Length: 251
Image (cartoon, one colour):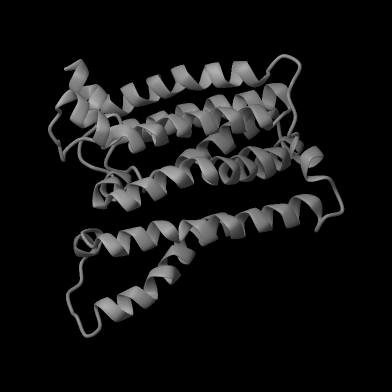
């Protein structure tokens, strides 16, 4: 609940001073108008940084009882004998390809994330940075760290897997509401990660898979303008900015 509240409230607090300055006395401000404001979008994304840091602070406080227990031991931040670094990295790649294919198949119109990516290069690069610097850590510690650990003690393991998978996917429903394929892709990713958590008893493999998965997207966000130039590809507003050049190349 605190994690969701931070993500919703903190970015809005960050943009309040800008809104008060930029739109003082204005009426009829719409969501479409705000999303067309590059500065507003950049500040909104920037607000996710303190939101993630606050979430990490709460996670540390709850999990370690304010430092009484080892953070590493509480979360199982170590490798399983049967699931190490390379297996985690290798698994992330086909997962990403499958997720992209599903999202592309059911793509209808731009999602909120697509609008952020197209808002400005600065917003896109900041989003790419957050996708690898804080998002995988925060999400894994919250869902497959704290929540799964608690639920698997209270109920059967498979029920804990289903509940955590659903909660993680549900967090992204509104964000990707325009693309059912993206929601399905996130659900599959969540199911795989939570199942690995249940089978290995470790969180580190889940974090690395999530990090590599997001990292591939981030690299493509950074490289997309150069790849467009290299392949002489036009802009297509109706499709996602992530992997657009691959879709064009395959077509």
